[in-house]
Amino acid sequence: MKFSFLGRMKETLKELPIVATYLSLWFCAITFYNQAAVHMPEKGIESYGFAVIQALVMAKIMLTVEMIVPVGVIFKPSVKFTIYLAILVRTTLGSIVALLLRYSAAGTEGFFKHQGFVESMLNFCDGDIAHILALTCLYWLIVLPYIAYRFLLHLAGNTDLASYLLEKRP
Figure 1: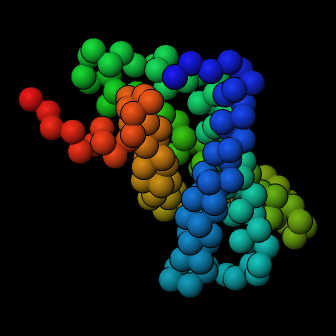
Figure 2 (figure 1 turned 30 degrees about the horizontal axis):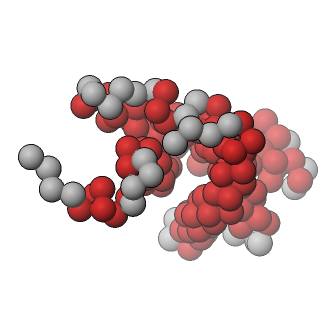
């Protein structure tokens, strides 16, 4: 599936609402969990707004990276383990970007509440490394299905993905 730059840009614009919606649902669910189950102080509706903005930025970053470095460039289909390594690397980088976006969202929320941008970033997750690591793992699990889907779609080529997944292997 070879596209020109404009063709890839058109495909990216078609996928942006889908990926942004997927990430928005997850990031809003994390925000709700933080407010309801963890009993973090409620910040009102703006927390959900920041979650949606974070999801939009994350979706744009993921799709831009995919447009600049397509899936087929970073692994060789003839070597089996390279696809797993490529998925692992892309998912890990995606989760780190999501965590950095969450840090910046926490700093922006603090800035709007006159608490200081850097101070709010340092107070993210109360500075608890275990909570930050758990959040990174959660972001990793959120990004993994999309990345795996994109790799499978690339492997399927012009054929239907469902027929590729259901095909009998020797």
